[in-house]
Length: 256
Image 1 (cartoon, one colour):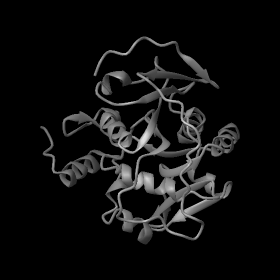
Image 2 (cartoon, one colour):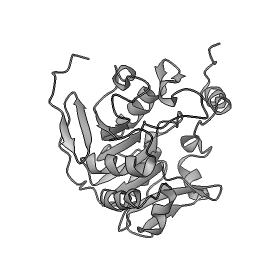
Image 3 (cartoon, helix red, strand yellow):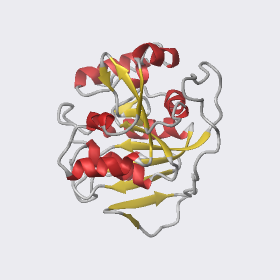
């Protein structure tokens, strides 16, 4: 991959975007999703859509003991692995990170081989996913975006795309596993950003609270298993034990 030319930083609200490489302008997707009440085809190859993906990478990782984005997974850091996976099906990946002076690692060093992405900086470290997701959706070039955290080592881009294709008249499509909503493995319309920003301004830090403020299609566990039988795409790693289990599931031997 050739070297990118230096580019001027651009402000988006209070956040700063740092494009790396060529970033395309993406309009609203023209492919018509399934009608409300209909299910998107399962098991068939879906073409790459002009959607964005938003990846939150500025969390504290307190229970893991080190930044999750830096964990080795196979031959790449976890952050690079997820960006590359999302790039298989999404035209743009927006990475939401901590302020440069406060980040616990140099995020650009974790993405040497990753594809097309934009870095959006929070205006303060560790303010939580509500504000971070608002910034990411505002920065997304597409009206439709999949959003996730950087603790999903077994994330499947085809499952993420399928959730986006379920969006019709709703504002969000959020899976529900074990009775719990999974708002960081979900699809959103950009208009959710303003609702999230208002939530953050009012002190609301629970991302699940969005479900009572916008029109949400909930994807139950049985329906999600039609896309991902073992639910590996939503398996997140919060502790060293989770990380070890994910390595085993992926067939990687953990290095001593």
